[in-house]
Image (cartoon, rainbow, N blue to C red; front, side):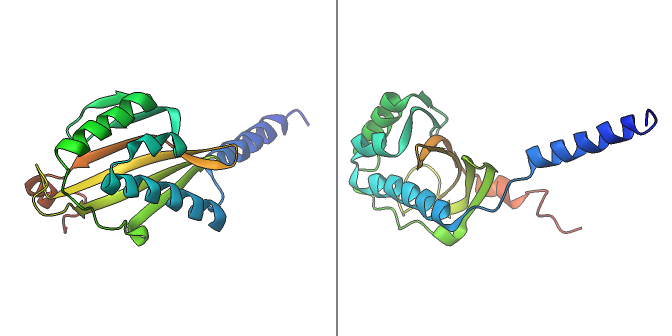
Amino acid sequence: MKSCLPFLIALASSHLAAAQTTTSPLPATDKEAIVATLQHFQKNLNDHKFSEMVEYTTPDVTAINIVGMLWEGEPAVQKGHQVVFDKLYKDVRFPPMNVAALSLRPLTPDVVLVVRGSKPLPPGVPPHPQTANTTVLVKRQGRWLIAAFQNTLVDAKAAADDPTLAKE
């Protein structure tokens, strides 16, 4: 029995580690709720009613905007968006979100990472024609809320030299 004990501990540890890193597929109801949260944010990009952010973000939400400004907490994230969109994006209409292009990856049953690949911005929007972003959502009291997000400008020249896409 003593000789089996290290083996049993190693076996149990490997199963515990696997359980901690493996998540179940996202239930359809969660996916629908996550998409609805993201679509509400998308709606606010067009109507500029960022006071609604309290409905779909956590109070401690963190955002890094398209030019690298770090905004922490719902009041700062809301104010930042309101000011920037009222000035820079006043007459810009963003297209509907392409739900099929979303990559939803559950990290835990209550935390999901959403990645949206490079997407074109409407014509005339400074300073670059494409962005990509990541968003972390958490499930609190049955609701999916945005806890953090980053929007990144895509440098077309650098993207053309992406080593992960290079043919070998």
